[in-house]
Length: 76
Image (cartoon, rainbow, N blue to C red):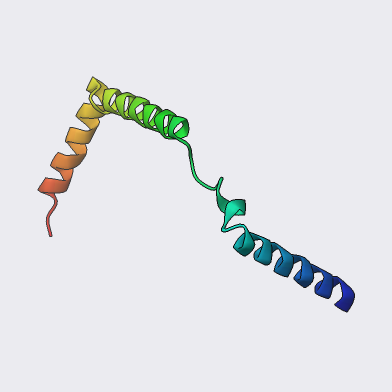
């Protein structure tokens, strides 16, 4: 068991040293690229449009109106 722990610690130390030596090259690919940001924005806008359509539909709008009126008429 002790050998296994020491081996893992040595591997971890080698990895940390390698990252320091390369100036963080191992972490260079950690973020999104521009095309991924663009796809994320397109997906968010599409979701917002669908949500807007659902909320402004007659059934949901009427139900939300009823809930707000009920909350405003509540006694404290």
